[in-house]
Image (cartoon, helix red, strand yellow):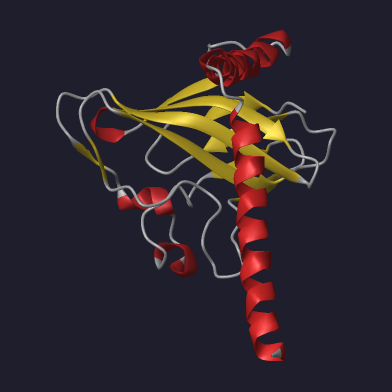
Length: 193
């Protein structure tokens, strides 16, 4: 008798749990078509709102620097931001301004064996503090992978690729550094944050 009672109790609990789950799910749906549109409009408002603050912070569409590379490659540095964790993250766009598909030079990965072993990257990038006479290399994770965009080998004509590189932060008194990437011209960039 106790086995039958336990089985009935389990079935009852399963049915109760399913009913409660369905009730919560239906309540979360809202029921009317008008409610379905509200999340879309607030999501697009969030997306729009996300771009407005950067304009308010003084950032513009104008890149910090443009570096020319071989075969029509162009790197536009959009930002160099100091993070609270003691890092500087450089964001930009790699573009192929040439008429043909460009093969990304392997030199962009740098010449450190540990970084090269992890495939194509922008691991050869450096920040140079000319006053403090210090060079900052792209950071690596515990497995030796560079903290930068990786895994690209070609870029079609007219195509762009969003890129990032993360470096140790220079002292807070340093607000301007030289950005260098093998096979590209170098440029002076300002660090924000």
